[in-house]
Length: 245
Image 1 (cartoon, rainbow, N blue to C red):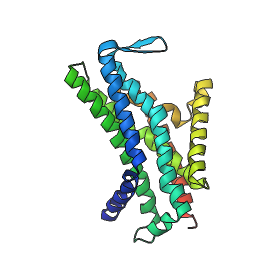
Image 2: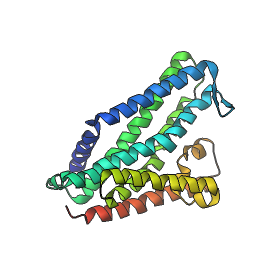
Image 3: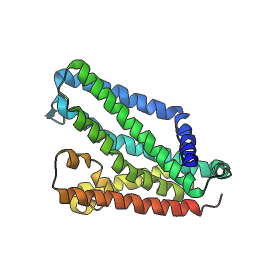
Image 4: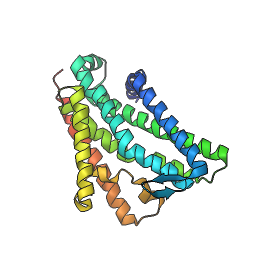
């Protein structure tokens, strides 16, 4: 366990020493703060639809889950997998007294930690502004929604790691991940029934949990997400374990 924790620390440090990942979070926080401050007085209008202040944190969360975090995850996996194979860094990592499974799992876990920190930071900014302004806030539900949203993001991390391990270079890995992701989202738009078989159709699963959907529907969705995570992670590790470095 100590070796795994140290390995996760090393992988997380690789993420945090890259300035672009700080910049991305800073941009998210600035945009979030502006939106929350603006809607505290004026509400939010999108495509002619008006949203009141309590719904704004969830609109922000949906935007993170569907657009922002997928792109960041694709970038992270391309950096930690494809780029390290390209540059020979991964070979140096495996010279340490750790197994391939530990190296693989620590990369996945470090990306998940970054995503969790990202979500919790945005959530903290929203709650702080709402509390300061005295706005109505259901803080437990808000915290639960942002925390639960890590689960479908794990599916995207497994998906992106699988694509990254099949790509020849990091740029192509990110591009291929984006194309495949938007294709699945497009299928969902065209046919919700067909799209429902993809875990990417259920990135906002928090809605089912905090709104009290039927247990059977929630269970089926969670099983789809979890099975997708397991299958793609297993396939990704199979590729990682057989990589010639």
